[in-house]
Image (cartoon, rainbow, N blue to C red; front, side):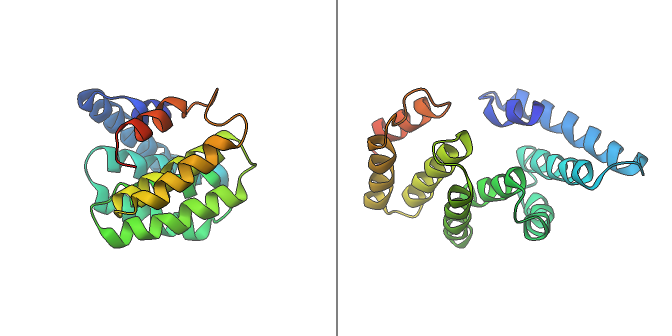
Length: 168
């Protein structure tokens, strides 16, 4: 999915280009089609907001994602998009709010699923951003000790980098 590519690329230029492309496509789709299902409309609105964030318009993205997350509490991708914006925010209150979101995402996810691992990873990131390195280390140790630990997950490298960064 292009959104995953946009979120995973390290190149700021590529991220900006993909964000602009996705934002335009989502906006056109929402404006021109009355035949979208509710799920398609939600996905287009979420992609539009995520691309706004990656283009640097985080405030507008948060304004758009907050009601989407509130209206769709069981939609994992929407909850993750909103929680990711919160955890990346420079605002301490937003990062604190992300903790509850990531906990809820982990609770509603199948244990050891990709979404569950992402939630645990971002829980550790949020604790680090809030200055609670001990709690972050606790989360990481807990995930690592439950077989298979980080091994074989798409987040393995991220978990290892977090541990090696000496922030925990």
